[in-house]
Image 1: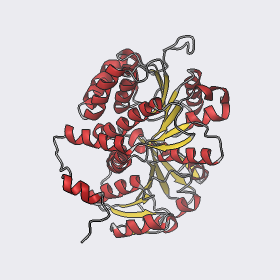
Image 2: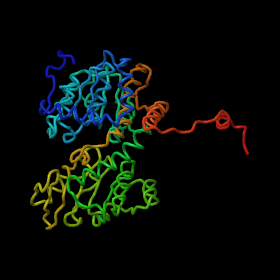
Image 3: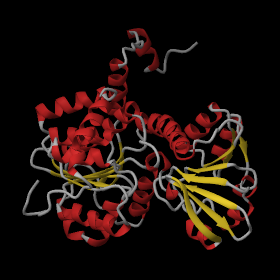
Image 4: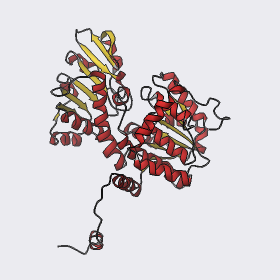
Length: 425
């Protein structure tokens, strides 16, 4: 870290939590063999030597291994949180104390602190930004145009962030390359489906300890996150209802065996509501009004705006904490609605986020996307770029190899056949 750029070395909750954090980081590493290989290669090749890198991510045990990989690669890197409730304070402490990586994040930071940390990150004058939701990138574009000359590019791994980048490109303000990590096959097929599916229900169970079997669970959105959540909820015995705006995804949900209906109809039937759309006010005033007494709502999308909590509060005569991460809104109509995790990512607010085995592939994509930006500095056009297929497939190959799984390869005759137009029946 360059002291002339940032005077503070870090801002975390408690440095004494480091031993516990280190133990948990090491435990997560047991199921991250792909990223471990990348860490080892980066330590030898130093692809980021002399570069400043800012990562705005959930500060978890899995993210720690991405940060270690980037530092091994020679980057002067700092971390800030992408969500006020997702920071694991012991992990932040260990990154500072044991790995020498500056962290500006603590669990429960307010909006003003979060915005200050974004500014702190940009004070570092980054050459590469690893973003999670596009807040750092949006801020540098809106407020610090003079720093764009130093920016090689950014990587983004959330649907929400990609949507924002697409809007920026359409508006003509995305003047640098952005790597779309979110759409890599080894990211969204696995992280979004299996990671979100398992960790979302884990968060609900930890927050409430309710039995999911027999409950009507409404999943808003049937993208990869919604598919995983619906699949896992059904596996635990829930009756799953899907709401969608996309007719293709809606018919897919129907053919996957789920009931599909508008939120207006689902609101009266659901016991537990889970939003995974990346949009705002998916559950709003008219929906709260018809919900069952004691209905639970939570969010597993990136930002906390999917549930219109301001509208809910305006209908409430009392709001009280009934369990950790669980607030009951007693409404003027005599019923109550229970909000989990303050409407923020329930899998990180009440649980530990995605399992490390799936984040192994997601963060391998992040690390290799950063390397790709450096290798192609000055060659990539401004705009959004996909992870090269060869990189995506290599991550999958390394994962299979680490799992001890072998697959077939094409014979010479098969290769010739699929590359020829003259061979037929």
